[in-house]
Length: 316
Image (tube, rainbow, N blue to C red):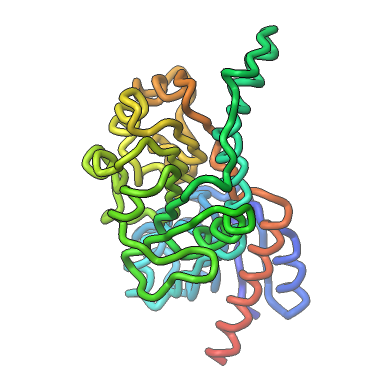
């Protein structure tokens, strides 16, 4: 009877379904790094979000471990190379939250185009500024999507339905354009788009992918959306671009200052760039909730069940 340990919040369907299939499925959402290392080596599978880093010490402590499933898309809290070198398979469930992230990006974008956050604050102060808050219709804009794996295509489907001209770029793929977005070079996105949305995984190669040099190539001011990983953006360069008008508005669901557990420091410990960002009127911030919906929780669990069942069908 394989033993599977769940250490983060996951839809109960996962444990219920695995239990009915004969797995010994255990949940401990108070699990810590040290507590996991001290556990007996009798765990076949680990299901985790961002509870702790799965590093060499964690992997060495559990020679019996056969697979790790990261609920969500990013795998940066897992030393996947070391795990796979020890015959531990590493999986994620990026399709689980792709629709949710796409809807959140759309909400951020519409909020920027129609000045909703500022207008809301103004009305609450007794200001009724109709002309100042005149907006722009989304269907009149060309949108560039950088990264076309899971959330990028989901966002493109929504944009296309609203009449947008959408182009996309992915340096790791070929022939990836579809009925919703035309394949394009990064230079074409920077030269022709007034909205640019980032949908890339974080890897060392993608650290500060969005930086001053790249931003300077843009031929017009653009709205920037980031729902991927904060460390893919150089925050200091972003602030400069917001100040000088190269970027008209930044919609950020993720921040460079997040830990691997997807948390930011207490406000009294905020670095200067985060303090500056939080005070800017042309910035919209949300706390890494793009993929957080009731529906995505269920999809993540369904995908995890499928991965586990297929693993044992293959290895039996």
